[in-house]
Length: 202
Image (cartoon, rainbow, N blue to C red):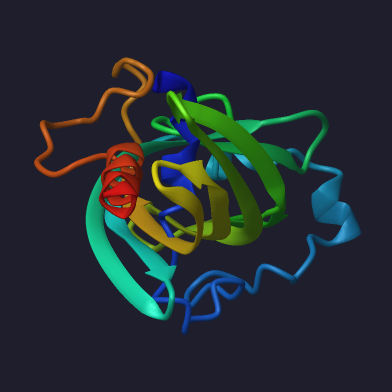
């Protein structure tokens, strides 16, 4: 079940699918590319790190949307030459989404498809359509992702639109990688997804 950790990140999406998750309300527009001069510098330290986030996942299936409060650790790491990044969600272990820094405080998340078998007879494909992230004025990460979950679990096939929105502060360097800054109530995105699927199977 641990190998399906990637599923959770996909759930951290915007407002029930009605919101355009490709546009950040505060940071420079994600499609605003870094200038050539800026691209020659490595500014990724401003957006990289491990972030202790909370937020909401929206599951939409057959026109019905369920909102679930969740928490997770989001890791943003340098990948390759600047401005390349990788974005991963702790409970979505093994599924890193390629990303690109587009301004000193913002980045785009690109499509990525991951597959997992969290339980016997259950195979899931999570197709991330992409999203955005930025560091807000308080220094917290805000990230929004959109994805489509398909697969065969329990009684039959599933197809669920997932929107995920998470926000939270950077973990201190002294904290263990992936360890929340404080105990949380609720569930990780992964657990929320598996609970949702278990209901569908009944």
